[in-house]
Image (cartoon, rainbow, N blue to C red; front, side, top):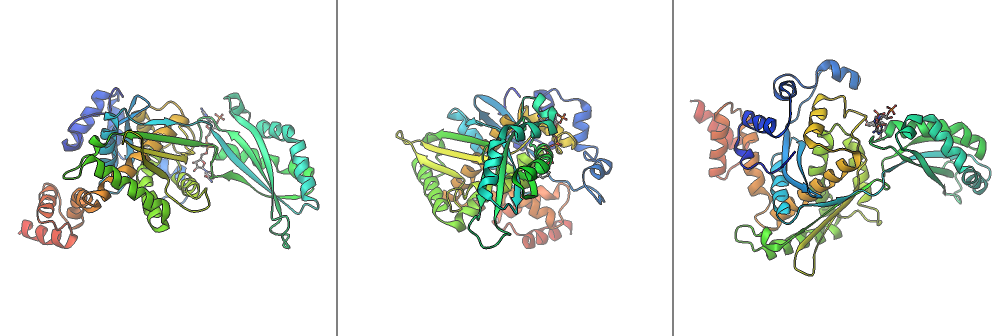
Length: 429
Ligand code: NDP
C-alpha cells in the first residue's frame, strides 16, 4: 500500500471505502465480491476446518489506518466486535506517524518443542546422555520434517532441565528437553509437534526413561517482536489538556499497571484489543498469542504491564512493547479462510517476522489510545459515542433509523438500550 493515510475514510459508506481500497490496491472484482457480497467463508470450507460444523459466525472486518512502521505504510485489517478499537488505533497511529512512525524489530524466530521424560533411574546421567547426543537428536528431528530444513529452517539447538529432582513423588520428577526450531514463515505447531513426536523412541533409549508429553510451548520467548515510539508532547495535546499533562497522565497510568495486578490485567486486555484483531484477521491462532503474551507479562515473577511508558531527556513520551508473537503467513487458516488471504493481501507483509512486528506496533498504539483517553476525558466519552450505533441496533433500529437514533443518544448523553428503545418506539409511531 503506497499510503495508509486515507483522510475521511471513517465518514465514507462501506461501498465508498471499498472503492477507495480498490484504487489503492490491485484487487480483482472477485476479491471485492468475496468480502461483502457472497458469504466469504462457505459452510463447505468451514466443514473442512473444524468438526461438527453447522454454519459460520461472522465478525466485523475494519481497517486500522495511518500505520507507519520502520518507514513503511501499512493498512491493517482488524477483526473485532468491540466499537472504538479500530478508531483508537488509527487515531494514535496518526499521531505517531507525525513523529516518524513506529520502530520495530524481531530478532530471532525460534519456536520451542518440549519433550517430557519420566521414570529415569538416574536423572543427571539421563540429562548428560541427551546433551552428549545433541547432534544426533537434532538430525533426527530434521529428518522428520525435511521440507522445513529445505526452506532454511529446522531444529537448531536443544537444552535439558531436570524438574523436581528432590521431590518425594516420582510423578513430579522429570527431565524436560527443549528443542529450538526455526519454523520460517509458519507458526509451526504442526512442524514442531511432528519433530518432537519423532524423537520419543530415541530419547527413551538414551535416557532409559518413559516419554509422555511431546508438544510445542506457546511460551515462545525466542520469538520476540518489539515496537517502540517517541512522541513529542505537543502532539498529545487533547481538549483542555496540555501535551505535557497527557504525557504525564500516560506515564502515571503505566506505573499503576506496573504495580497493581487488578490494573495490569485491564491494561493488558487493552493491548490485546489491538493484537487479537490482527491475529484473527490474518487467520492466526489468537489463543496461542494470548497465552504467550500474558505469560511473558509475568516473566519477572509478577504479572505486570506488557508495555513500558517513560519520558526521555527532551520531554518526549517514549513507549515500548515486546512480546512473543508466534504467527505465520502460511499454514493453519492463513491460506484456507478466504478473508484471511484477503487480509494478508491488504497488509502486504512478506514474512512472519514482519507480520509479528506490525502486530506489536498495533498493540502499542492501542495501549496509548486507551491510556490517553483514561488520562483525559475518561474512556466512556469516545467509546460510548462510537458504541451508540450498536446500542441503536440492539434496541431494534434498522436502516436510516440507526444513525438518527445513535445521534439522539449522544445528544442526550444517554447511550443506553432502554433509552434507544424509547426512541425507536417514538420513531416508528
Ligand atoms: P501448517 O502445518 O498448516 O503449515 C506449515 C507448513 O506450511 C509447513 O510445514 C510447510 O510445509 C508449509 N510452508 C509453505 N511455505 C512455508 C514457509 N515459507 N515457511 C514455513 N512453512 C511453509 O501450520 P503450522 O505448523 O504453522 O501450525 C499452525 C496451526 O497449528 C495453527 O492452526 C494452530 O492453531 C495449530 N495448533 C496449535 C497448537 C498450539 O498452539 N498449542 C497445537 C496444535 C496445533 P511444506 O514444507 O511441506 O510445504
